[in-house]
Length: 421
Image 1 (cartoon, rainbow, N blue to C red):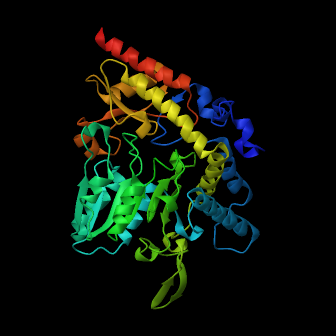
Image 2: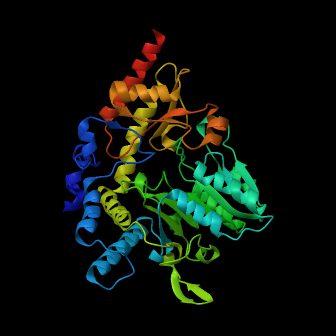
Image 3: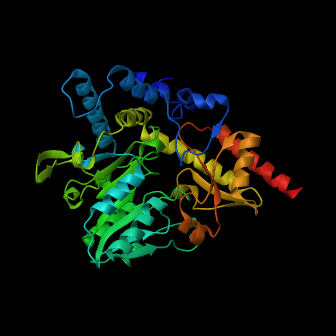
């Protein structure tokens, strides 16, 4: 099934109101090999309609954007800006001028970290749940500019990873310049109350940056409802190609951020001893962008919208509950994170004293199941919340099935039984 050709969403829905996963899976040829792909937190698969749109660019109107007046350049520029508009609508910005095209979440966060004018005495508040991309950048800002960094810990039992607004009220003050927080932990899958945290930050005049890498692909995200100033996310985790990403910057605060790179594409005027940058997102998009990736991101937004983010979220909740309960019921398997109601479909676990990499390899070799293992680019979390060097992480997305989750649980059981012999 090619979702882009659907005349109505009804054909993609089952009687229970959720989309027909079997038909969706036809758009992902890699699944025909029998692979059970449960590593979408690291990077999702990319459906055929997205690939087709990218190939269309290369085959039919391959040209640079915002440069030429010939019809190929005009077409490329139109499609690039159309992708920006689709993303703006997807997260409900006030204007397309608030959307900066990046390569990934990491680049977006770094644009903010390097672009804000820091003052000695400023404070940054973050949490121990963060991906390294939303953690080490603030360590560097602290060391480089003499700002204070406050790290919020989850409440006990810490292995659930639950953060509460009250914990931020205790540390956010009038010296706080920025609160940088993940919307969903890439290890525990726990959902952070970012809206309430943003309200606390704004009461003290602080800016709010949300790492949306794990939330935007799996739930409806509305930046105006969240009240954030910045939101960074990656295309490659939401059915788009690698090399595509977004930094949302609220229009009113964008002028506080100095571009990290300048050059071609960012300039309004240049004299021999002076230059003036463009206004809007172009000032942050120096050089030739990955046009095909941006167009692919726009196509991925179309794909997700036609399935329905609310449908995706509801379906994933079913898989999350099944995976959590199934793994949690196996002796000698320790599952981390909160109950299914407070997380998305990211389930980290360990099997007895086995090395997580050994478990992941066994699942690949014996059951054709692809999962992630290690510290998942979140060593502070692994060291202080899980208190283990790493975990096995299974993560579900819209193309996974209940049968695949059953096979994961069964395969982990076999590993435990083999260990007991």
